[in-house]
Amino acid sequence: GDSVTQMEGPVTLSEEAFLTINCTYTATGYPSLFWYVQYPGEGLQLLLKATKADDKGSNKGFEATYRKETTSFHLEKGSVQVSDSAVYFCALEGLTGGGNKLTFGTGTQLKVEL
Amino acid sequence: GAVVSQHPSWVICKSGTSVKIECRSLDFQATTMFWYRQFPKQSLMLMATSNEGSKATYEQGVEKDKFLINHASLTLSTLTVTSAHPEDSSFYICSARVLAGGELFFGEGSRLTVL
Image (cartoon, rainbow over all chains, first blue to last red; front, side, top):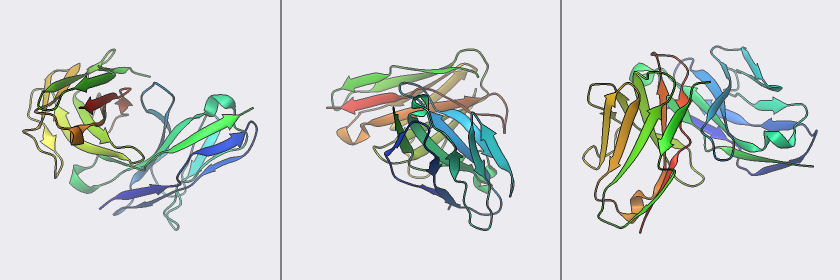
């Protein structure tokens, strides 16, 4: 079945540091890939997505590129801010079961310090 | 973005009692709502998909008689954990969308603790 593996946290960075959160997936065919972010006390929010190989999703300075050859969708940001502190979830929407079902990774907590 | 709200955010109950969690779409009509369960340091696991006016579709391994889902209107879905036991303690999250394939909007989650 479909699965998503992402790096364990917490990840602690200083403000303005470079961020990478790794995400790899296993799925049949060509799923859509997502990054969701959950700020403290709030629900998950879509951060960015990519629907086909080599697509790059981007939003709020975050980027992730759909790499079919490595089955990866790593999240990157060049300069993090304290306000980026949150839990980040990688997810895929597969084609099995009629589609439209998200499979999530375990989430990676990011803490950004001054 | 659209807002989905869950209530209650926290609930503590005694073993053997039933607990109802509500999921509301506040500014849009949701044709489909999803219920997830999350254990500490684990991913969100889809429990069931509910479409307004029809029976929920449960994922394999989820007891439909234990986790009752009702989607009576386009803005409200409820999850009732019946005869709760300590192993049901978890974080329950709902999401909703307007149309098939559309963006999902998530509630803030409800933490259930069964004593």
